Amino acid sequence: MTVITETKLQFTKLGSRIGAEIRGLDLSADLSDATIAQIREALNVHKALVFREANVLDDDAQVRFASRFGPLTNAHPTVASVDGKPAVLPVDSENGSANNWHTDVTFVVNPPQASTLRSITLPAYGGETLIATSAGAYQDLPEELRNFADTLWAIHTNDYDYSVPKNLEHANAEERRKEFTRIYFETAHPVVRVHPLTGEKGLFIGGFAQRLRIVGLSNTESKDILRLLQAYITRPENVLRVNWEPNQLVLFDNRITQHYAPDNYDGQARQLNRVTVAGDIPRGVDGRSSTSVKGDSSAYSETVVLDEAAFSGVQR
Image (cartoon, rainbow, N blue to C red):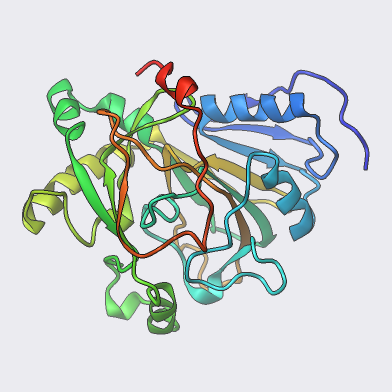
């Protein structure tokens, strides 16, 4: 492998609130710790990074790159990995599209801290990935609504409301749903999560929080409040639209973003492979940590233990 020399990486912003890209950085190379630190810092600032002409041409290279940011999760708590690659999840149009806003695997108590997606097969048009900053959404809230959201907790589950009419469901929808829910999970997370590295606050909700409720409120009240908060996340100024091309990898911060894959490519083949980095247990504004209600996620992912001294020094 070649060694990348120490140079300042130049990321080009893709929007004022979220997203930056870099072209031609060889992610399959033996990247130095200093280079990885620059990428981490850029991720903290921009929330989502697009690497074009990245030279990540196989699963092994993607796994090596993702592992530089921490231990990896298994591909998914319930869905099968790529054969022989336990950390790699195929995101394949044959199994439907993830056309709902969500943060990856929030139904477990220790969701991944970061996700990588790599282009494999792309349609001739469409097939983008939308990524939204939940920190930008939190800042947009009126002060009174922010203060209210700070106090809320929501139950997340993998048996969530797909909100897709039967006539628009994918042909394999029922089988896919059975696989997705073969182990049932429920977790209580703060509606506002404090990012352990930056101290930013972000709305920690999304599709897996829609099925059940906000703690202490009725289902009707919960749905109305979640719908109101979710609308701030998906405001256009908070959303990055990633147009895919060959040999591309996207890295996004799962702690403070949501994403959505629009089904806008007329049934053409589309496959990305996903590798995720193990995360910590989320904390709310009051310092309390998420708790598992049902389901054991230890076989899916180890839990990253944060440096308490560092965490306590973060500005909130």
